[in-house]
Image 1 (cartoon, one colour):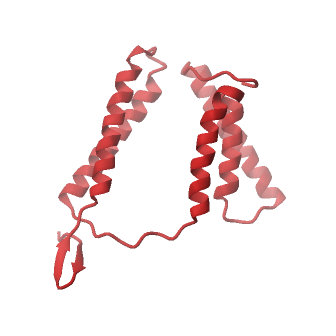
Image 2 (tube, one colour):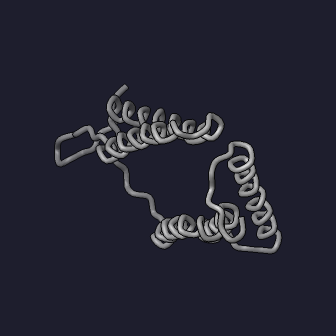
Image 3 (cartoon, one colour):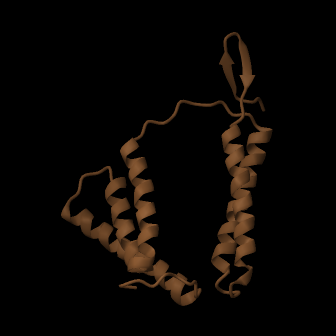
Length: 161
């Protein structure tokens, strides 16, 4: 199997995604830190962070191995909306700040709907709004029930819940 290549002048040079490898290694370290920090949690409460950490570590290691063994040519960057990218970061930051003010369920529901408005490329109509609204309440509600009630994950309690 031949490695993908990039043409530079008259030479053909294989490339690796060095930034991807560095970030993957940082995610491995973050996953190890998550496992270390979950040691003080109850056995049931630690299931979620340890599972996420293990999956993150495995996927990151797979990326490192893939990049190390198989060269990959850098393609053109995908077109996208800078507004949507910045809005995503801002909404997630505001969500984190609102967690302790409004509580997990209410702030997560607001963040879900804000992200939905930013991410939706299609036009809005009454049917789509009700479908997405119902799906949002169901998804956030299930996450709330699983985290707080089933796994006993400590979440911030705010004005609402």
